[in-house]
Length: 118
Image (cartoon, rainbow, N blue to C red; front, side):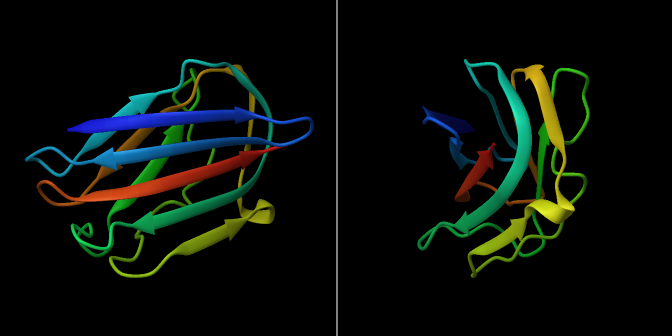
């Protein structure tokens, strides 16, 4: 299992990209180095073109209080299609690191999760 995290802090929008590969049990995880505050404006999930995750895999991004800032919107992601969720279905974070948790992806599968905060 591996997870590479790219953190971009622009003037008004923060973009956090999690590139993940699942372990044999279908899970992947990673935690940001930076601390974040703001509203989650957009979630994008992109399955890998070669090693796509199993259908209906799950994405959770927890704050340091173990609360999913996606408010469940990362559940049952598609194996083949890029999917997006907009702010009206997402939460917020206050001065916390963010921890990605992927489940149900299958062994050695890969994908990308992008979160935009404002």
